[in-house]
Amino acid sequence: MAGRRAAWGACLGLGGGALALLALVLLRAYVLRPAPGPRILGRRPALRFELSARDRHELKEALKGAIKIKTVSFSPEEQNTTALAEFGNYIKKVFPDVFSTKFIQHEIIGEYSHLFTVQGSDPQLMPYMLLAHMDVVPASQEGWHVPPFSAQELDGFIYGRGTVDNKNSAIGILQALEFLLRRDYRPRRSFYIGIGHDEEVSGRKGAMKIAALLETRGVKLVFLLDEGSVILDGFLKGIKKPVPLIAITEKGSITANFSVESAPGHSSAPPKEMSIGILAAALSRLEQNPMPNLFGQGPEIMTLEYLASEFSFPLNLVMSNLWLFSPVISRIFEQKPSTNALIRTTTAITMFNAGIKSNVIPPSAKATVNFRIHPSQTVEEVLEIVKNTIADDRVKIDIQEAFDPLPISPWDDRAFGVQIFRRTLLDVFPDVGSVAPGICIGNTDSRHFTNLTNAIYRFNPVVFKPDDVPRVHGLNERISVEGYEKQVEFLYQLIQNSDISKLPKPHAESHEL
Image (cartoon, rainbow, N blue to C red):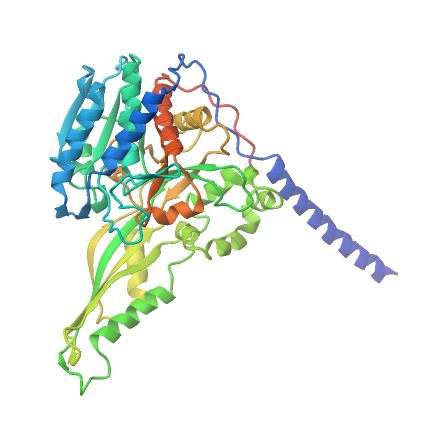
């Protein structure tokens, strides 16, 4: 009898623990959700974004004309400078009010980049900056539905290199400002517009020089908005609404050359190991031993926390209780390249060169590897792992370029830019889900502006479906006409929304366990 009581007691104890755990999971899922941002009150009446048929035609044709200009960047030393100069002449022609308004100053930086200073009526308000770039990656006609620089319109989409990376932003910013100026708009808050000409090949001649010039002038920014993330539609299982992800950091990068030198000889009497085999084995070890899974140590955990309430049952329980389910989620993230890139430093072998003749043992083998560094790691830490993984002193490593991940920008009720973005998204995309912070897995011109502000955000207000991702730097890059109109509307409203002098006081913060 005593034994039976003990057994029942043990069962009840286990049941009580399970019930307590279940209660905690439900509490976090349905009660302790991240609090929404404050409502921004006291805005002056906005100039409504109302377009005539003529406006719509002009808006579309302005982007098309820019796409047709082949501003291709092949390398830092090889750019289509004729096209870059043509782009400058083009924007003067299509945006006459921007270039003739007295409170707007235009400067050409680094020969081809553009800096606009839009002077607000209240000099006490700290300025902000909108950033974009005009250059594009190369594109051959093979595999495209239409020629990549034709800007042809098919089924409501404009096709062409630069339609989403990133002439849509460069032209869209100027188009929004042009429309506002026609309505006699004068901003209260000053702002800058930067259009770089070499973002695709490091931004050192364009954006870097713009940032350096502004720094010499003592400029400090309340926020900076560049490309980098989008509104995701259909990417996340269990979420029905489109999700705006605003990147609050971007991964660091290492581009390194790996090489092996060995004595040449005749292929009829080969040594046991040769340069190609030694290097191939080293690179294989890098591929077979990926960098550590760092899920939970960077902003990716914030992304899921902010989106937890958007997931349908039972995923909302899982995402609201990452303290319990992180091991499962991290393993799921590893399965796809797009999500795997969010949780670790990635390794990509991008070039391999060796050999001079079929019957000659090559004297050397060379390869280039690109690492994109997770926000919780540094260049030094990654290189140490690389050396230990290769574990072969015959393989020499020469660093071409390396920089740490960018600092994480503020994301809370006191972050001016975040609240402006939320307000503007509500104005223009009322049907989207929660706005969440994210990681930009590529690199942007914004990394050159860290001395001007700690509030750098990367967001392109364009809706992306899963099949849109491979189009960026790939085949059949495109933007819908409706989507581009929405982007211009977002920028039009953003400029006006930024005129508020201060944010309302944040509400009481949500409880935490």
